[in-house]
Length: 451
Ligand SMILES: Cc1cc2nc3c(=O)[nH]c(=O)nc-3n(C[C@H](O)[C@H](O)[C@H](O)COP(=O)(O)OP(=O)(O)OC[C@H]3O[C@@H](n4cnc5c(N)ncnc54)[C@H](O)[C@@H]3O)c2cc1C
View 1 (cartoon, rainbow, N blue to C red):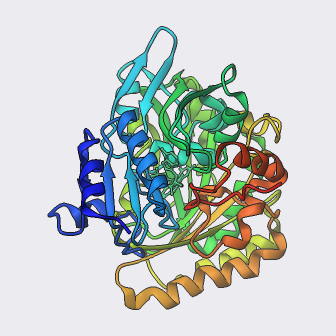
View 2: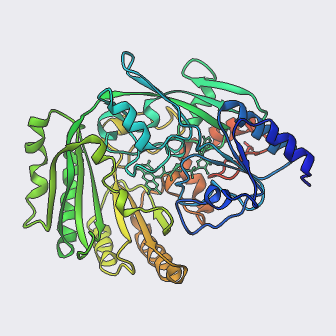
View 3: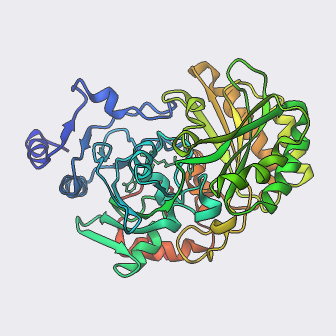
């Protein structure tokens, strides 16, 4: 049992705040992006730096507390806050240092993509990051990182140079290609299983400030035709072009099927490259053209507000067969909420040319990663919105490739955790045994420390 003396001693060891249930800031500090989860931790350590993280890890371990680790708080499954126990909250850790000569950036674990892009774009640089700017760099990077630059520059993990990690025994380790190489291998796709990452160092690339991006949307009636086009066009696209398809309702409009893209090559070539996306009949919306890279990075923001209820299912597909497209089109027409949709992400180009055992992220040969996301605004809507996602996912099961993006797992996906790590699971389990033998970090898509 925690006693007041040990809590006060812990508080005194922190440079940041220790938040408890009777504090004014408690409700704000425990709130997640996904309104589905209303959890009440006993303690929230709002860490100011690495030393606070070491204190929090040591305290949580010595007091045998359940521990959740929070970066941007955007996890679908709500794993970054616990009931009872301790939240190690990294969100106050906002340091970002860009080295324009080396084209690298070191960012602390509380940084969100909107903040990261703001700093790196000041130098005309960027790395592959999330497509909703409120998402944290930490959870996204540790799972893999799909984004608008991934076909050209690889996944976020392909651009990770090093990381500083606090392990379960309270040590501070640097992980890179030359230091603690096994840990570095595991961090790049192994989620939060091996410790608390306090900062990340990324490779940057010259991007923008203007790219060719945005979207073109067609009526839902043409969903099958547009998705078939997406299948072929995505396969043949140059690396500079990353394309997602989506089923969504624009504000005040009917459901559409849209093609979103980011072309990060020379602007004068982009028009010809993207023109076929506008050739599928009369678009309902044509918002494809030059725009600032930072605007592209916020293109989905309005569709994913903080505090709505969300439920998601996704998986990797080797192909989008006509049969699977039929099913997507059928369910797109029966969405129970205008806020819900389907997003077709992709792993191709540079992201697909990395060996599947080069690092923990294993799924390199699946050019389609559809994600079904339902969103609604009050608890009364939960049953039908969750059912829509589950029913569609069940109907698609025969066409899925078997793998799933670890960052797309939801709270009821425990039976899919192994397939999220694919053929790398055994090696990850051995690594877990080395770095976290007692499974102290277990509120995550958990790798058991047994081989
Ligand atoms: C609206 C939305 C859009 C998204 N878009 C994309 C996208 O474009 N591309 C993509 O790849 N993914 C995307 N995702 C998935 C996203 O990568 C995951 O939700 C990710 O977990 C979010 O990271 P976070 O730091 O915000 O989350 P948090 O909820 O804070 O953390 C998630 C988990 O990561 C672990 N973790 C977090 N920080 C640390 C740390 N510093 N050290 C160790 N473990 C840690 C913990 O286990 C924690 O439970 C999106 C998710 C949402 C909800």
